Length: 318
Image (cartoon, rainbow, N blue to C red; front, top):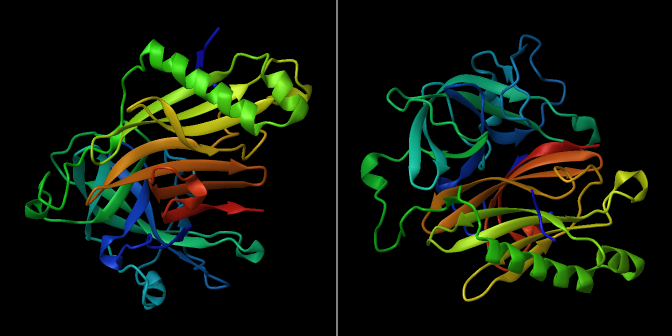
């Protein structure tokens, strides 16, 4: 934070079934957890399913399943067929792709009585030779592609370089970002909120990331908070997707989703992965007052998260 003086699973639009991608979470030092499909168990959840230790990544609640149980959910036209021993590709970000092997079938029962989904999936173990690549808690998973199909550049597939950028943002750009967000606040905030926020220097967090074509973008979360607000809530909060070329500018904005402080009141960008064929994937956490969601979206300039193509959503609401 810098101070200046801030599941359901469906194919994405225009995606074919063969191009599906899923959210994955770090389970432990060499395993990941992934849900492939949202389902409804009704009263069929097996009594001999065993709850296993929770993963490092929040948002997954796995039970190991008896052999053969998931077959009943793999008969529909949109169901993903997966089994122990299958190999998948784990998208770490940038051009880093490693192979995992599915080792344990899992499920997560949701509160279906209030409309939530349950999920089926698997634990996957890193194939030998990859070491310990986990530097974040969340990644993407796709169907395995042989090495010959993973070339970094072809005429119809740009270099794979969509990723979060772990580099500091220049101070002059920080100042321009703050100026742009203040201007946006003065346009979007209403009445007394705008007048109060105008007297507060915003706190903000900037996350640089690159798109699949190498273009630089920023995701910025900002909070106008004096510490004198009732109940400890901020006066105003705002998140923005921004570009820097040819000048710093706001492309789209996100508004407050919950009142639970800076780390929860706006969508969080957890990772950026390359989806192939010039597409950039965002892994997002969104908290509401009575809900929590992990989402894998295909990034698009100029639109907010509600209008980006959705690849998968995992979570629950009351």
